[in-house]
Amino acid sequence: MTQYQTEAATSAENDTQPMIVAQNVEKWYDNNFHVLKGVNLTVNKGEVVVVMGPSGSGKSTFIRTFNALETYQKGNIVIDGIKISHDLKDIEQVRREVGMVFQQFNLFPHLSVLKNVTLAPIWVRRWPKAKAEEVAMQLLERVGILEQAQKYPGQLSGGQQQRVAIARALAMQPKVMLFDEPTSALDPEMVREVLDVMRTLADSGMTMVCVTHEVGFAREVADRVVLMDSGLLVEDAVPEEFFNNPQEDRSKKFLSQIL
Image 1: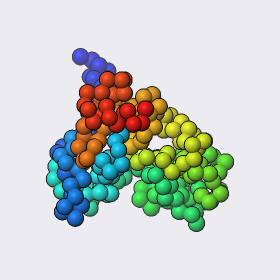
Image 2: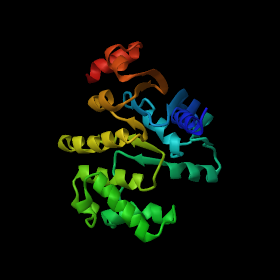
Image 3: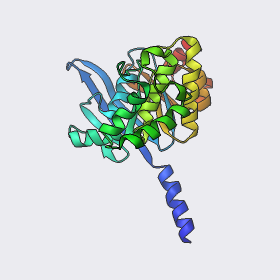
Image 4: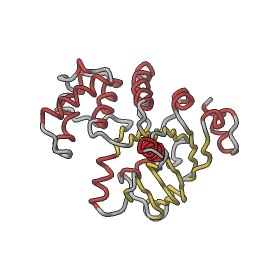
């Protein structure tokens, strides 16, 4: 095998290696509410996985364990080879590699859009201000709001603020992006602009886990769709199978309510 073939084979192997491995993850609130009941999920590099389920199913709690915003009591979660534990060094390392976009935009209202995006790279990555601003402007152009760089969050629409939040997460150059119902707080006419940014991000090869009820996005962009209910992962299938031929009764009932 030539050196080129060896390098190509190594690259292909790396592309199929898991980025996220969650095994038998269990979590309780106050020792009496069992919110996650032995959940298993593997996400390969470059995969887009959409997590769906009714309110209270544990889906948001589950993906928040991927960057230690939620702790878990049993099982294992490994992100790009790093096990999430109570070790702050491991947690900090994982959070540098995992970006997250929430329902609410969580922007700093007293900082300009540009400063919102550059804050973490300057303080966490220790980038020089000039480099952070150069990358931030590139990202704001990528999400379609370069002209808003000097404005403050309160001067933007909800869709624009969410795109700033995406740019802010991308500024840390993460290996994984988590989205926790990123369009649920938006007016309907603003949803598309955020989903378009997410589609572009998926097309670029970013590993993504998205909690959303946006069926069109799931059908078009997801590699897999999983359903959670009552703390369990009920079904895991490619979109065509998930939406057209679900295997589990709970999946059929859920889809009958949203389609």
